[in-house]
Image 1 (cartoon, rainbow, N blue to C red):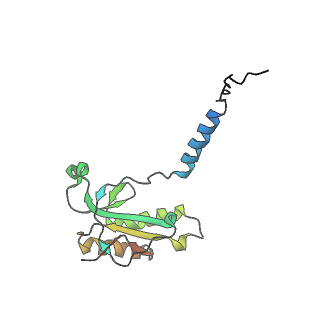
Image 2 (spheres, one colour):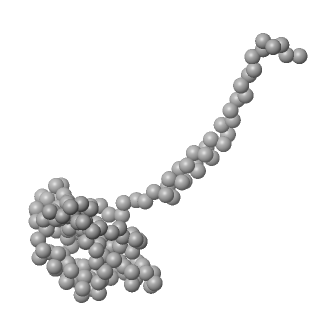
Image 3 (cartoon, one colour):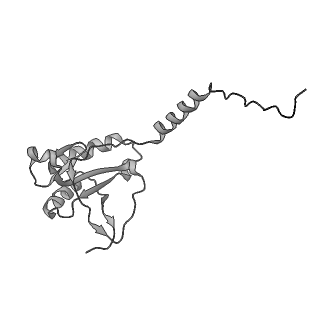
Length: 154
């Protein structure tokens, strides 16, 4: 018989399932996190625009970055705007090979929806943009988007 003054003992918490819980949390974050696909080698400040739309399927988008090389690359490449395709600097003539390689990575049904997004610094000369557009036209990459930030155009 228990006396009314006895204190109840708290049962011990089992930690046997703790590694399983930690593993499930780790697995969740590994599956849901996306890794950065390419290292950015150029600096750019996107121009502002009033009519901005988000791209629907980012897996069908290939990026062409245009801007001044980042500071640790300027000793080798200078300060003139450069074209970055994937993780390296290229010229406008290399865009056809780049588009071909990007198309080969997609399945047959998605190739028609492939979009090329041009992320160019707002102070980039139009000559470089025109050269890129001409090469994209030669490669039959006709769906082009221009990256911009939403805001008042100046």
